[in-house]
Image (cartoon, rainbow, N blue to C red; front, side, top):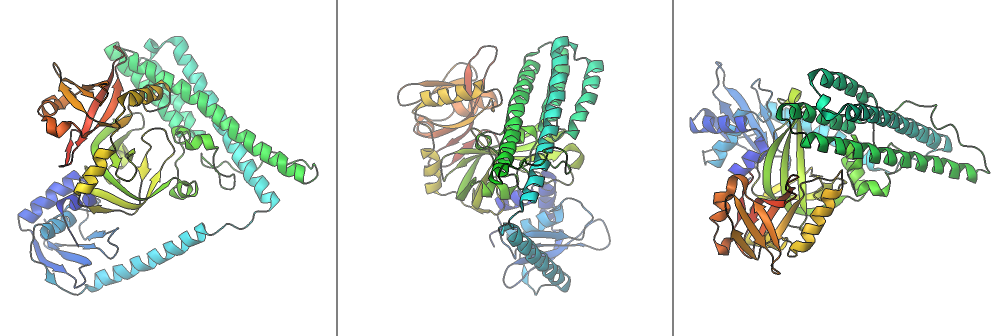
Length: 514
C-alpha cells in the first residue's frame, strides 16, 4: 500500500475535502489509527464537533477501487475525515496492527456479495444473445425507425427556430426574444436530441452576451455550428433509417418477396443512439462525434464491441482546467493527456451539473503516470475523449519522459495543414492539441514567442499568462524537447496561434495549465 499525496489528490477529487482533511491530520485530530495485518484496511477515529468521534476507513481489498467509509453525515465521498486518515498514513503517523472490526467485516461481506452479483450480471450481458426471431428483429427495427423519425421531427423544429432567429437577425436576441426562444428550445427535450438542444441554448446565450458587447462574432460562430450540426444530423439520421429499411427489404426478399412489416406504427420510442438489435451505427459515425453531438451517451460495452479500446495504455496528464458551460448548466473538468503508448493526445471530460455538485466527484490535476488495462476511446476527430474503469498511478520514469518527448511532431508544415483542415470543418473542435518537437524556441516582443522545426518552419506562440515562464526557459530545456500546444485561430486577424499547455523534457514536465 503506497499512499502518496498524488494518490490522495486523485482519490479525494474535491479541493475542499482535500485541504480540510490535510488540516485535520496536521492538527492531530485522529486517534486509534489502525491497519490490518495484510495492509488492506486503514481505519481510525477523528474528533468532530459532536461528543463521539467519527469512525472512518479506507478498504483496499480491490487496490484499483479503494472503498472509503465514514460515520459523518457529509454527502461528499470521500469526505474530509477519510482524506485526513490517508494524510496520516502518507506523513508517517504510526498505525497499530489490528483485526478487521466486526462492522467493517460485515460491510466487506456485503460488498463482496454485491460484486459477485455484478460479475454474474456482466457475464450474462457478455454472453452471446439468443438468436432473435424474424418477428423480434422486425419489432426492433420498427422501434428504431420510430425513434429516428422522432429525431428528424426535432431536427426540423430546431431548424425552424434557427431560421426565425437568422431572419430577424442576431441583434434581435434581446431579453424578451431570448425567453421566447428558450421556451421553444425546451420542446427539443422530447425528441432525443439533447446535444442539439444544448447547441441552440449556446446560440441564445451567445446572442444575449453579444447584445452587451455589441460584438456578434461568437454568436455568429454558434449559429454556424448549429446550422452544420442540423444538416449533418439530418443526413446521418436519414442514412440510419435507410439502412434499417434496406435490411427489412432484404429479409423480405429472402422470404420470397413477402413485405416487411410497417416501420413506424409499433413499439415505444427508445433512447437516442444505436438501438439494441439494430446493429452498430454507420462506420462514418465512428470517425466523428456526430452521435455524441446529437446527444447520445455511449456505453463502454458498445465501445468495446466496436473495437475502440487501447490495451495497457499509459497516460501522462499535460494540463487540467475547469470549464463553465452555461448552456448545459454544468461545469466540465477537462484533462489533456499524452499517451506514452501511441503518442496520441486525448481528452477527459467530467460533467458536473450545477444542480448536482454535491453528488458528482470533482476531478483535479494528476501528476503520476496513469496506467490502465483498457482505455476506451470515444468516436471523434482529433483528440477524442477517453475513459477508463480500472487504473493505477505509477511514478514517472526517465523512460516515460523519453516516450513523451518522442511523441512530438517534427514536421510543423504537416501539423499546420492538419489543424487548418480541422478548423474548416464546422463541427470539429476549433482548438485541437498537438505535441510539437521543438528545434528552436525564440522569444519575441510582448507575450509572444515562436517555435521552429528542423526545417525552419515557424509556429507563432501566444503565451497568455505564462509569458515570463516560457521566456525564462534555457535553450537546453526547450530545444529538442516536446511542447504540447492547443491551437487557436484569431478570427479577426486570421493568425493561427499555438498556446503552450506543457513542455515535456528528459528531466520532467513543465505544465502551464494546471
